[in-house]
Image (tube, rainbow, N blue to C red; front, top):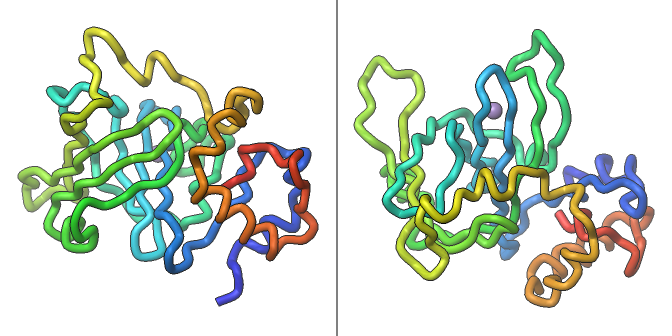
Length: 223
Ligand code: MN
């Protein structure tokens, strides 16, 4: 399959623009996750996990919590295209979901167990390797009434070395901003620890010769 995002990349100079380069799924690539903070009529966090070539999506009104005792409502919503993962901007008034969208967090996720089965059966366990969210998490479907159009799930932090009590730390308050426009110096330090992301970047560069920027490529252009 031709890379579906070639045109997207050709239209952008990633050495100048901080937009994500975007990556389509190929066998063996890490699975993408993204959380978009969406200031619609009600603020919520759109939690998206790449699975089977699309982004499985949940709207989490309060956003994630690092406290395993806190269960955050996560309303299952429609799949989004993979390319949506890099979207930031303002959805105009009158349009569905009008309001500002920022990429609040992004990275890769690793399913624990069979993700297709977990998704189908309403219990997905996974590890997140994001810039804000790390460690083990669970999405679990709860009793949905038959008349409910959208399934309620819960997003829960599992116990591990990353957990933090809510009384001590609230990630949505501590780190409210987009990860896209961040200062590059801070990010660059951590890059050695992300070989997977670099491999993806090399591959993407090969299909987008115009975007070759070498060491000047902003870290945001990785995905
Ligand atoms: Mn939304």
